[in-house]
Image 1 (tube, rainbow, N blue to C red):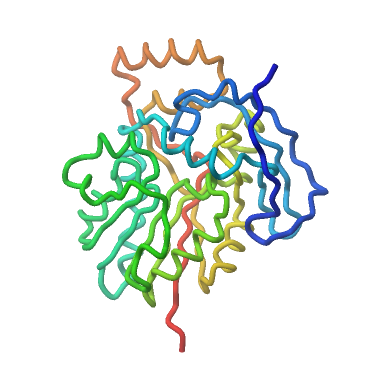
Image 2 (image 1 turned 180 degrees about the vertical axis):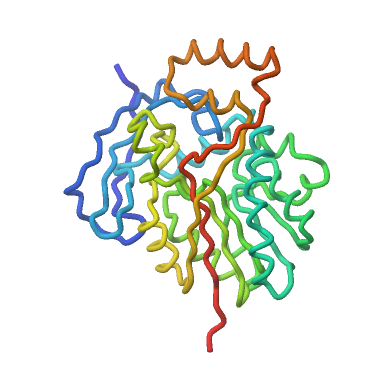
Length: 307
């Protein structure tokens, strides 16, 4: 018998619609199979998911019902972490957008990375000349292995805007985290408050309407019990606009990861993948960097000064 979770119902977390007429897929998960990596980043896909609804108003795909906030908070606090290598690759990819962002800023003072993990992106921010850099991370495992030069900059906590001075940041970043949040709009509204005039919010989101997601269907790793919602270009723009951003830019990302990580994501039997990944690492081929469009989008929202 499948183990159940305490679940609660919710409306669309972007626009508030309660129209559940478009059921994308019914729930398929067993809480008894959740291991220490169930809520960890860049894990082996488990191919489990909650009941998913397509919002007819904003095009968001969201889970309903979902586990209680108490359950989710505990799960992320205790989640394991073994993806430092992949985090460094991702940080370098995302850092490629910083030169364009810097051109829009009056000065690079005050940068916050939400869901910073082991602080890999904090290092990239410092390299680009940002000062007063901070990160927040709810899981203790990645902080424990963070490089010493950034560990002191990471707060072990959930993001709460009241813990930061209003309009104190020129840049707030958050990568592949909005999918995990009970209330993504509230988090973005909080980020808007701590951004100074002319500040930028830079996020990375899974695109549920990407080519890779369309080809793989429910075998795509984006359909996972970690993800409480999945965005499209339409729904992510709606999210930013409702949070107050007046200008929103969406760009497709070309991700670079070692070959063994790409193998981890493919919809092959778990035992086969583990054996093959082990062989790839043993021969050294597994560490070959490969760049592919993995269905991710970079989103920049700008807090324009009021005239």
